[in-house]
Length: 143
View (cartoon, rainbow, N blue to C red):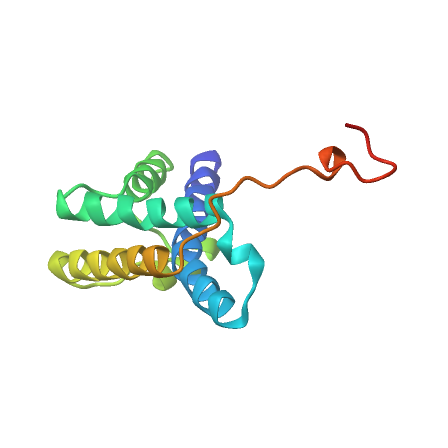
């Protein structure tokens, strides 16, 4: 039971990672179009670019995703032969795993990483550090 729960937790983390990459790009594009300041946050943009770049490089090198490998090992430790149809696995697996040839995934990851890098370059994040309100010299704040 513990191993199954841990495997489900890894699957949730994996789904969150995929969501960060996919929905992060959508949020960035929408945010740029609508002038949302928060999409210019350097750390958000850099970690987003890094997340998809990592996936693309792993795929180009033929490396298995460590989250997939960990989840599979935890499910096997739970006595399952691969991916059982537990509740979380039943709903999340079809959203993030597809049955395509590896080259299709590699091409998709490279294309997505290229798009994210192009957006990063064409609409660069704000590189200037934000000043703390406590240090801006306004009355009632300390310096």
